[in-house]
Amino acid sequence: MPATTKDRILEATELLFRRYGYTGTGLKQIVADANAPFGSVYHFFPGGKAQLGEEVIRRSGRMYEELVMAVWDGADDPVSGAGAVFAGAAEVLRATDYLDPCPIAVVALEVASSNEALRIATADVFASWIGAIGARLAAAGVAVEESRRLSHVLIQLLEGAFMMARATRSTEAVDAAGHAAVALIAAALDRVL
Amino acid sequence: MPATTKDRILEATELLFRRYGYTGTGLKQIVADANAPFGSVYHFFPGGKAQLGEEVIRRSGRMYEELVMAVWDGADDPVSGAGAVFAGAAEVLRATDYLDPCPIAVVALEVASSNEALRIATADVFASWIGAIGARLAAAGVAVEESRRLSHVLIQLLEGAFMMARATRSTEAVDAAGHAAVALIAAALDRVL
DNA sequence: GTCTATAGAAGGATAGAC
DNA sequence: GTCTATCCTTCTATAGAC
Image (cartoon, rainbow over all chains, first blue to last red; front, side):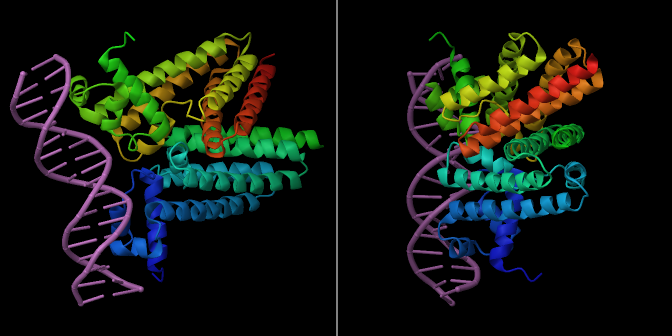
């Protein structure tokens, strides 16, 4: 693997954040998983756990957006695009033994009332996602205001579905969310015509 | 205050869980907030933090269900009931400086991959909520299967909206979720007629 | 500049005084 | 049975060897 020490630390942290969250993840566990010496954390991230956490949130938020939007763009229209995203998420959940498909959800809830810098990082990620989805809906003809509202809703359905699916260890919640997502987008597109 | 020591511990823990989650909440902070001696935790909860956590999840999940369903039942029909729930949640968020209105969300994501007993407790709470909402939708004439699917979706919208609202410190996400919830319920009721 | 050893604080848990 | 003092572990962070 040609990954640098810094990259291995970032990737190991992202995975641990999905499983155990920010407070639940220790630096010692991170360096163990990343096969890195302990000091490397402070070499690459002088600000310690907080700086590492912020970089992981922003980086993984960006990568997850690219991943999801690639699935979306692979479909013919927004309705089947959203359907593919939810179907893919259900598959990922089953394949990973219900590891959180979203890299920032646990951290976002944990730090919202306790760490302002990290909270802003998660807010920036959500804003970027809203922009990406909203642009696609608007391009399909949905009014700008409704596009923004609907992009919020799609993210909520996804995050809420992940929470319920992980708790119940079932993808029923994801299927229900996908069903609603498809219906809402179809209704919005109907109003365009 | 006539609350017993055990009740004060439970209430303080619930509040701390909403703010900092399970791993982010220390037993010392709990007894400090509850004005209780440290030993009381192990007196009332011999299983330690895990037992206390499970009781808090089940208890607060039940209380939150009663609270939300009381708001729902105070309205004339499911559409305005759901609308009142989301409007009330937005108001709570603003009034509490964006403390999580849901008592189990942070913990649910934190423990899903790390603590099986607590994970099951959160799953049981979600199942109870689904039953409560589904029964009301079915009573309004919605088919049982669709009632179950829609109750999943309403919880997802609520939880997803809380996550985004807390991260962005804005209730825009809750308003969007409420808008979608009302539309989905109205459409389901239209199909009944 | 890469890594080890350790400091200092906070975590959960327990023993035992009263 | 109510409470205090303490134990042991784990955490983040740092100092310093190499």
